[in-house]
Amino acid sequence: MSSIKEFYIEKEKRELINTIGSAKYVSEDQKEAMIAVMLNEQDVDHWKDQVIDMEKRLKDKIRNDEWDRRDDEAVALQARIDSKKKDIRDKESRTTHS
Image (cartoon, rainbow, N blue to C red):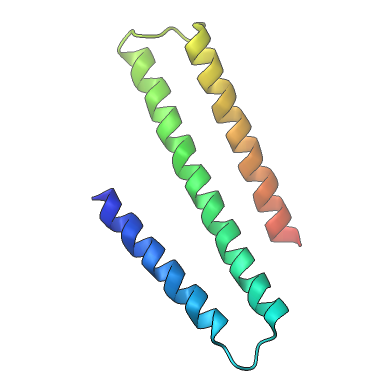
């Protein structure tokens, strides 16, 4: 199901890029800026999905007694989650305030 959703998201993205690219009264710099903003927002959404998946994996491993929170794997995964969350906050603050 998610592959169908991803297909349509990519299709909408391509159509929007084509629409922006064929706009008559918009400069090339403006077109590039609009496309860059759109792609950056999608990157953040993708990162958020990754964080959710990683958090679910960590929670499942601990709940199923495969890992303890102090295990190296759990600590490493939590560090990746924290790093990704920081990257998301940084990217969102830069795109929101610029």
